[in-house]
Length: 387
Ligand SMILES: *Cc1c(COP(=O)(O)O)cnc(C)c1O
Image (cartoon, rainbow, N blue to C red; front, side, top):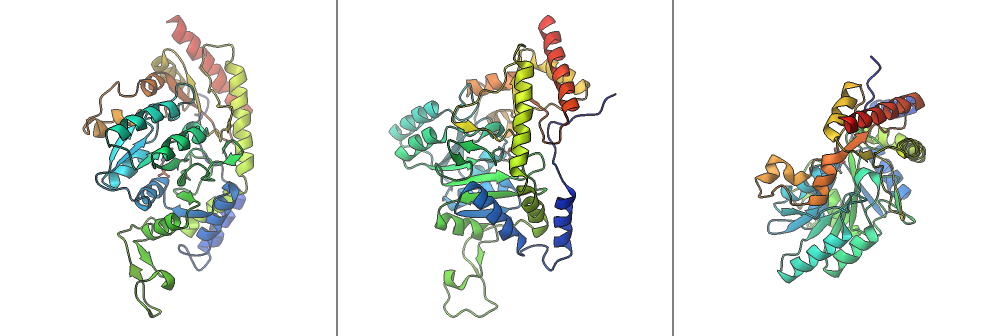
């Protein structure tokens, strides 16, 4: 049988490995110079003022919510089509979560539904404190429209950009925070750039950056200028908030720093793979990803929609094609059902969920592998249509 083709995988070079080994031989495995260097590389690549690395995007989302003051009695809205971490971050803070249905073409949070829901919430005194739009598959949400709607009511924005480093909205790189308070990247190995595990929060706001830095390391500062005590001794540090140990290690940061040098190359290769899929599926009953004209996707995922999805999905897995599904609408998870959510809550997200398949997409995928995926997909779709 032919080799298994995963839906995503990391690209690690000898130079990446050497960069990690250098850290292992150095004085600092953590809290050394490589984390700030990696933060600076990402910050300057996306044009944001501050970058705060963390040990995962989940941690970064949590400290982002904390910095914006999310707590009990607050509400946070996100997209139903996301990984559970986007909404769990708000639950960690004791807030309530709610979901805004997606646009039926982009699969991202729908600005029109958001506007309507905000208007209703303003009328009933139940505005959210924060919304977390998610750039599904690497395509930016319509951030100008989302920002216009949220800022009318003073609602803050965290972009869950876990899929989208290297993407753009209009002329701006995702992560520039032109239309948000904070943006968060993930560096899990299936994402665009990896550190093994890791994440980063970007912001243009000095105070939000300060709070996120505190909260990723126990709420402790060693910066004399920020201390309550005057004339602190050299041993002295201060815990000012209840933070966590969410620090990234220098070992992880070295991999990320080395990978950042290939960001443009990664995105270019992903775009080529997407174009090849688009062309191959054009004459088949396969719905290829629609692209908002103002966006340039980072192409973390290539999602198609097909009739008879279950049969197509199973046939592809049987043929050694590592298809996947991003995502089960979050509120359909048992944990969220127990919070009171019911099937039917976000019809566009549920329709998407009944038809979507994520096809293999990663920079090192060979042309032969992609042709095999295309042949298996078109065959499985034809078989499902005939059944
Ligand atoms: C991967 C992912 C996360 C979580 O990222 P980690 O780095 O694994 O914590 C959050 N949101 C989305 C949309 C993701 O894809």
